[in-house]
Length: 436
Ligand SMILES: Nc1nc2c(ncn2[C@@H]2O[C@H](COP(=O)(O)OP(=O)(O)OP(=O)(O)O)[C@@H](O)[C@H]2O)c(=O)[nH]1
Ligand SMILES: [Mg+2]
Image 1: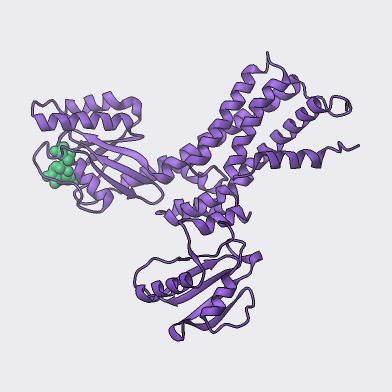
Image 2: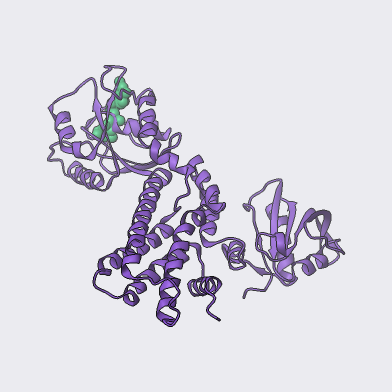
C-alpha cells in the first residue's frame, strides 16, 4: 500500500533527552490534529504542542510539519520531537497507531522517497551507507553519493548510449526517413570501444576504493613468537589475542577491524608458520595458509632481535604478494624500513606506510564513483554486454547487436532505479520529430 500513512520511531530506542517519532502519508496532518493541540497546519513550520491520549496529556513536544513538496518522502510528513524516555516514545507511537497509522517497515520512508522521485536508487544506497558509516572515509563517500555522484558519473555514458539506441531504432522502424543519420556498424564501433573503456575504468576505481573504504582483508603472518598477536592487539587497541612468550600460542585465526586514519583493515592474526608435528598447531598452520591465499594484504612480521633462515624463506615464499615486511621488537634491535615495537604500541611507521600505500585509492573519495556492490555488479553486466557487442559487431547486423546495447543500457538504468522503457521512449520522442 503506497498511500496509507506510516509511522515509526526514528531515533535509537533508549533513554535520551529527545526522541523523534515520524509519520508520513495522506492522513498525517489529520491524525496529528486529532492527538495534539494543533488546529491549523502551516507546512514547513515547527510548533510547540502537547500529545493527548483521549483527554490525558502524555507529553510536551515540538512538532515539525513538512508539506509534500519539501518532505523527505514527498508526502505530507510530521515529526514529533518528544521526551526521550523509552516508555513515552513508545506510548506516542502507539497513539499514532490507534489513530490510523500503520507501522512502517524497515526502510519504508526511504522507499517512498525513491518511489516518489525525490532520490534515485543510488542515492538510496548512500543513505544506508551513511547510516552504517564507521569511518570518515565511509561517511564522506556516502555524502557524495547522496548528492547525486553516481548519476553524475554515469549520465554522460547513458546519454550517449541512449542517443545511439534511439538512432538505430529509428533507422530500423522508419526506414523511409532517409534524412535521419544512418547508424551502420562502422559508425557504432568507436562508441562501443569508448564505452568499454569507460565502464572498465569505473569498475576498477570502484573496486579499489571499496577495498580501502570497507576494509582491506589483511593477514598478519610470520614465524612463531615474532609478535603477530601483539601487533594485532596494538592495531586494534585492545587485548584481543592471547600473547605469551611460548612459541605456538595462537592456533586459531583471530579477527578484528582496525580503523587507522583513512585505511580500514579487516585483520586476521594467524598461527606462526613452522614445521611441527603437534596436531592442533598443524591445523592452525593450514588455516593460516588458506587465509593468506584469500588476503588482499599480507603483513609479514619478523623479530628484529632474532632473524634467521626461516624468515628469509617466508619473505621469499610471499614476495610476489607484495607483503609489508615489519621488523618488530625495535626496543631490542632497530632495523628495517618498517621498524615497530608492538609491545610498546609503537607502530607509527606501519600505519604511516599503510596510509601512504593506499593514498591514491583513498583520494578516490573526492571523485564521483560507483559506491557499492550492487552498482558495481550492474556495471559489470553492462560491460559484459558491451564486450559481446564488440565481438559481434564484425559479423552481425545492427538490429542484432542493438540487443546487447539495450541490455547494457538497461543495467545502467537499474543502477539509478530508472524505468528503462519509459526513459528510452521519452528520449526518443523528444529528439526525433517523427510525427511529420
Ligand atoms: N621486547 C619486545 N617483545 C615483544 C614485542 N612484541 C611482542 N613481544 C613479545 O614476544 C612474545 C611473543 O609475542 P606474540 O605476540 O604472542 O607473538 P606471536 O607471533 O603471536 O606468537 P605465536 O602466536 O606463538 O605465533 C611475547 O612475549 C611478547 O610480549 C616487542 O615489540 N618487543
Ligand atoms: Mg600469536
